[in-house]
Length: 425
Image 1 (cartoon, helix red, strand yellow):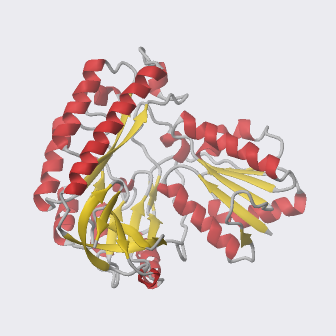
Image 2 (cartoon, one colour):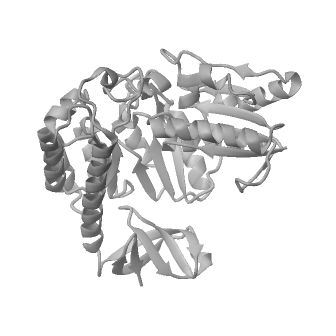
Image 3 (cartoon, one colour):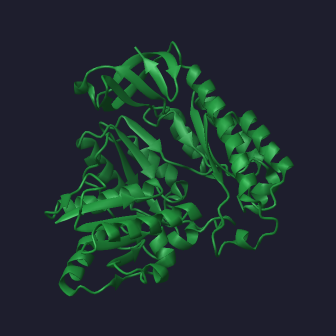
């Protein structure tokens, strides 16, 4: 039988989709590589972090049902966890799982094939143990490894604690074994990912710094990247490891969400702007050339023009190398739903546009700093005679070369910026 997996949302979903893909391939199923090719099984790994993601998840569900009405339709992930009661009413949906037992995908498919009755298996994710998944091989140079699940921060705008449940961590030895195997499979870069990555180990007797210390010892690992970490989880111990290990790359993504203290407080974030700025300064003392990227939500309820301008001012002061800008998206059941002074979509779009413009200016400034410098990059694809891949600090390099150099570490000199590329010779 043929299958196709749609993956929406975060890197955790990407990882979990690849685990399901591995399971099916290892059990004789054939992967369809083109969306318009008919498959017998469709798996939609959904996202619900924004209303747009929710709507896209439902759109794909309906699309695949129309594409092949005889297919087995499996809906998993965050939107399935939150909206299972709605999804099960969609005629044609075969299996609904949520965020537990994705690693048992084959069992559910076999059960459905035998009984042809809709399966809905949604667990209460409070006080669950970590569902240990092992990825045998990732289909790219860069491999994600999920080390943690769940979040207990309960930011006022966020539905994820309800969709992902309590914080739970993969056993450290399981993480080390998975990464060791992936490195042996010729993956040059490992990306640590989770719902609340820096909170790793809070449910055990060790912490994120302990894990980093062990990972950087793995023989053959060239790069270690942290997908995202909260500013208040970058402890002195974590900073010491970043200072001491060249394996940890010169890039870190730290979601700020707002750069206005009033808004941060209303968002129930656990820091203020001064704390954030001081910690960024600490990072740059030990890694002067590091790329620091962030997420910013604009148009949060009660955000005035003055508040937004303060965010722009503080962002310039921090000098991020890139900003992922999002308009506030109302999620039912969050505290933000009950807040007064919700902004119009027009205002939110205008503010996103301004933030994107600022982001490109900052990104170009950062890229231009490296013109004339030698850098190392790992080519990931070959296109039109050029090798394309990333440096450790996530510059996207374009270099005229040979396809045989894919996945090799190359040293090149950056000649110019041709956005979004840094062109090398």
